Amino acid sequence: MDRSAANPARVVSDGILTVAADTDRNAIKMPGLEIRIRLGTPRESDLPWTHGLLMSSPARTLVDNLELSRSRGGRPSRTLTMNELEDWVARKHIAWGPERTDRLRVEARDLAATTGRAHHLDTINALFDQLAGVEPVRPGAGQLFRAVTTGQAWDERRILLFAQAADALSQLSPPAVPDSLPECDPPGDLPFYESYFSNYIEGTTFTVDQARHIVETDTPPAERPADGHDILGTYRCVVDPVGRAATSTDPDELIGHLTTRHREIMRGRPDKNPGQWKTENNRVGAYDFVDKDLVEGTLHKGLEQIGALPEGLPRALYVMIVITEIHPFEDGNGRVARVMMNAELSATAAARIVIPSVFRDEYVAGLRRASTTDGDLTAYVRVMTFAWRWSAAMPWDDPTATSGQLIATNALLDPTDAEIQGVQLRLP
Image (cartoon, rainbow, N blue to C red; front, side, top):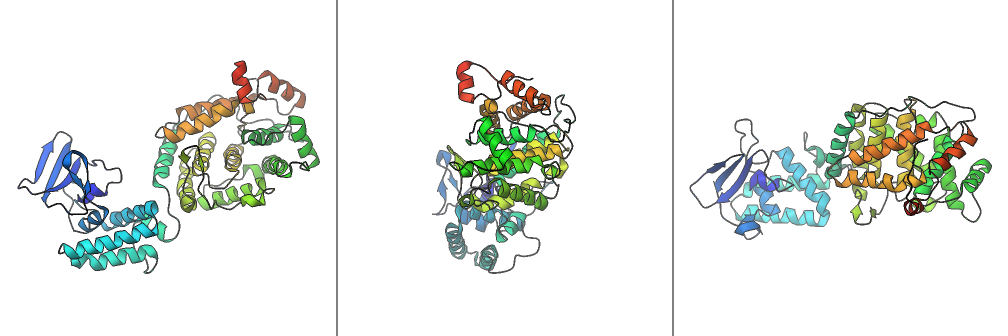
């Protein structure tokens, strides 16, 4: 009941569980848990729960939480504050969409009218009219509620994941990697191989000679123009020493860099809407990325935390997680995520991270574990820092030495072939 019924996880919080029952008892205290009991009877709309108990319907949860209550002993009040209730309604709207949210309004009105609580009808009407944009949002309204009304709502599960990631990465002790790579003019092979491998990971595969010809002639092959543009677009994003290091702690500016780089990378695929947020939801296997309607709000909310992270590797790995987890574009998400990651490293003159083809499966597995293990970044950090050490040790300023080390470290092998041969990426 009350606050307990509105808990999104359906778990006890603050050691208090509120229930309604036809009994004279008002509390049951146990170690670590206090069950607060108020007089009440089941409603037809209540939902079956475990052990013969019933759970408040969404309509009853809403109406019950409109009752005033006070906090005791520093603990939250029995019912939600108006800010909390507004955000609860906003979560329902995000999960359900407009049609089911309208039904909640009708059900809440009917319940209030038939249970002697018609005095709440005006509040219920105002709540849903504000949510729909019919009335202005009240001053001081819930943060998520306001975001929904302006089209800036976010994915709360992902924001929690990002907060956990930020906390872990803020305490990261980087491995021993050179502070910077030697700059050379021309800039050596690093930009070329960064583009080549980034596209190889996404299935845009050329031989090294074919890709080099595309870059040197600035011309995509006639038989594969879109794939050739992918190579060129990525290369243009990483070859300019000033542009590739552009970053910010302002989320709006950072999002601007993101869309600009995506537009450049995907220039040869106008059907993929370069620089524009996805219009259809995307997924890999059974894993869904952030809903298309929550992309901008989740990006903005997630990137707000970047300024609190140490510069360099922590910010780089954080940006990678945010963009990959949201998957804001129809295509090209991996490529632009890696460009954004390396921008954070270039901004501090640190070695960039290149993911060679042989290391693709480890890279993907590390990202997947970061998404599916309650924010455990152990595998992700291990994979990315190994790739960082490899990238920093490569002699990018010497083309002959680079070619030799790519072979010696198994970097050019396809991951499937490498698994069959029983070989892995080695450090130079």
